[in-house]
Length: 270
Image 1: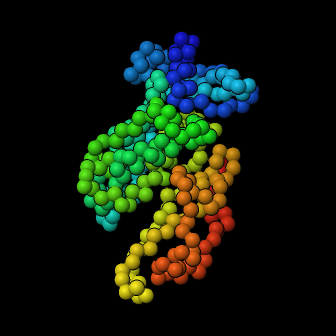
Image 2: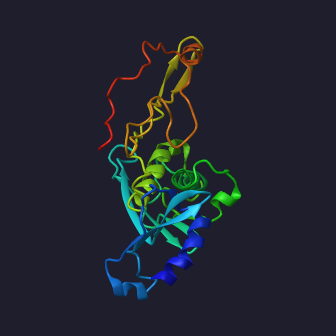
């Protein structure tokens, strides 16, 4: 057991899976099936947690094997089936692999996320959980690899449409966090609202042309482990709502109210 922990520790430091722990945390290990440790390929049930000192702080280091997660989008249009999103997050040595094998096929509706977009929200989730205040550069993401089957809605074959890809940004972010929740339970948030960018079309009589009105409804972040989420902030990406004045000046719309509804979101579970 000691030999395995020593081998994993520097790899986890490189991967960034080091989180702040309470001052009185103690070292521990857990193994559901002791003999499975002999088979690295099958050994996905073990979680190790132990304390190390760094710059006068006590850090809780967590090592994990494979953590799966599954979610669904409602559909890709009228009369279509739910869109299945499957992933497994694997930490092996110095590498983190996020694999979407099993995710559903690309759609004709344009509800597809090209792989660069898929990767960006996976990187964001790992960064938020492991080293949120560190530099955002190549070194931060080098240990993280993201794979999605070619032809799936997270890595479609050209010339598949991808205009509505923003519907996936929250879901991807939440799915990675959901997978890692058992390993880092004190750091994850709940799943947030995935309603962020309503779009409506019509005719603009002032300009005598068709128009599309795009808005960002960013009501706040999901609940944190020990408190509510943050109000009126975007989650998973850095954006803000389009100002009312800009919308009314450029689109045939009149916005009567734009406000937060008190206690409209679920609180945290103590």
